[in-house]
Image (tube, rainbow, N blue to C red; front, side, top):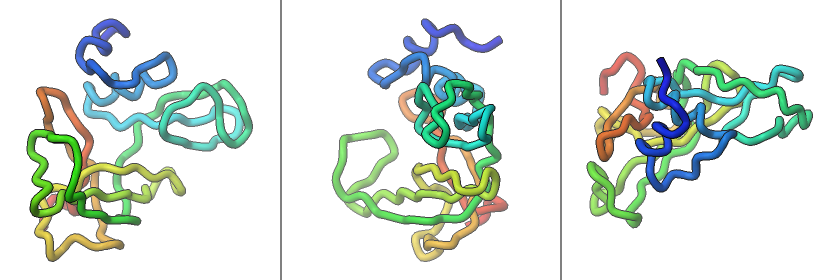
Length: 147
């Protein structure tokens, strides 16, 4: 049974949760990366919104994606808000991944379980999960789980 709206709000205090994004956060709790898919035109998008940015339809379905893809953009953050497991001094790796399926959809998250020398644009990655402040957070690791 999925958590209620109230439970999601309690588990993610301070997050910008509304009726359009609550299913994204429910997905995190289920270790599913849910993106919005338009029932009318088939377009995928993230972040969640009330209507499809391609055709303006309000018929959107939160749908889990596999999370397999290729690093499209890679940055190393040296400044930011304090967060457990984040080392800004060495540069915290953050990757934007272009998913294999659905094609054209991208998502940005930290890159883990990977040697710095292996981190590069074009690296094949897969979705994994880390915990921050007791909550599941999506991340990417090299495909196959090896660095």
